[in-house]
Image (cartoon, rainbow, N blue to C red; front, side, top):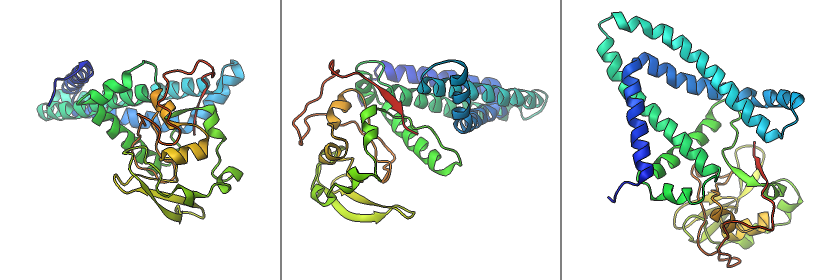
Length: 298
C-alpha cells in the first residue's frame, strides 16, 4: 500500500470529526442526523421542480440554477426540522443508564455519516469538474476512489427503489440530449454492426446479445463486454458512442465526465482515457471553439 495523499488525509480528518460528533450527540442524535439527510433528500427530490418554477416566476434566472437553489433550500429546511425533533428526543438519555451505550452507538453512526458526507462531496466534485486534475487525485487516492464508487452505486439503487425521481448526478454538454432512444436516430442505427466494438471501461470487445425486453413494453439492444462484463445499449463502447451521439467520449473523459448506461445500468461510472480506437482522438482539456453549456438530465 502506497502513501496516503492529501485527499486521503482530508477524508480521515472528516471521519474523525464526525466520529467525535457522534460520541457527543449519541446514538439517538446520530440516527436523527441520518434521518434528516434521508428525509431532506426525499423532500427535495420530490418538490424541487415546483419550488424552482416558483423561483423563476419571481427572479429571471436559468432553470438549472433555480433547481439547484430550490433543491438545496428544501433539503436544508427539512433536515433542520428533523434534527430539531431529534434534539428534543435525545435529551432523555442525559439522565438514564443508557448514556454510555448511546455514546458508543453514536460513534459508530457518526463514522458512517462521515463516510456518507465525504462520499457525497467527492461524488459532486467528480461530477462537476470545477478543478483541473481533481479526478486524477481521486483515482490515486486509497480512500476517495472506493467512496465515490460506493456512493454512485447507492445513489443509483436509491433512485430505483424509492418512490421519487432523483435528479441525475451527471452533467452533459447540451448536444448529447439530441439523441432520442425512441426517435428516428435510434431506428436508423444497425446495432448488429457494433458487434465486437471496444468497451469504454477495459477496451475489451463486446458481444451483441440482441434486442431484449427492458422490463416493460420496450426493447433495447444489449451489449456485454467479454472481459469486464459491462452492459449497455451500445453507448458504453467507443464506436457506439460515436454513432449514437456523434461525438468522442475520450474528449469528454479528458474534461472529467464519467459515463454509464441508463438502460442496462452497471451501477458505476467510467471515465474513458487514452486514445479512441474509432477516431484516434486523444482528447483536449478545453475546446476554445465551442461554448461550454451543460444541463442536468432528469
